[in-house]
Image (cartoon, rainbow, N blue to C red; front, side, top):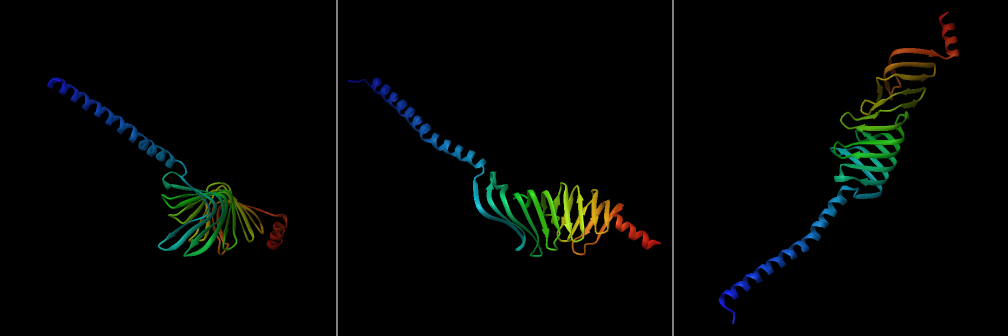
Length: 226
C-alpha cells in the first residue's frame, strides 16, 4: 500500500501534468484564431472591393454636387480613397443642374474632403460649349473649382487659349489664371497674364498684353485709321 506521503506526491504530479496539458491546448486552440485575425488585418490593407459599372456621387443638403460614372471601382485601405478606371462620364452640378461634363482615363475620389481627381486625356465641356483639354483636373469642393494644374487648352466660339494652368470656377462660370496666356481670336494673337474669361458672355480681361495681329487684320486696321 502507498503511504500518505507517496499519495500526496503522485497527486501533485498529476496536477502538474493536467496544468501542462491545459496550457498546450490553450496555445494550440487559440493560435489559429489569432493567425486568422492577423490574415484578415493584412487583407484589409489591400484593396478590398472591386466593382464594375459603378456610380460615385456627392450631394450637399440633398442637392447633387457631382457624379462619376465609371467602369471599374477599387476601394483602398479603410475606404479613404476610391480609385476608378475608365471614367465614362463625370458631371458637375450648379444649383442642382449639370453644367460641366468630364471624360478621362482614370479618376480618384477622396472620402476625407469629398474631392476627386481625373487624369489621362481629360476633356471638360461646359454647357455653353467651351471645351478644355489637359492631362489632369482636380475638383476643389470648398471653392467649387475645377483646377487644371498642368498645360491646358480652352476652345470656345471665336477664341482659343493656351496656358500653363487654369481654374474653372463653376458658380461664377468663369475661367481664370494668373499664368501667361496665349490667346487667339478672330482678329489675331494676344499674349498676356491674369486672364479672366466669362464662359457666358465670352468677354475677357487680360493684363500685360502684347498683341500680334494677322496681316489682313493689320491692313484693315491701318486703312481704318487713315
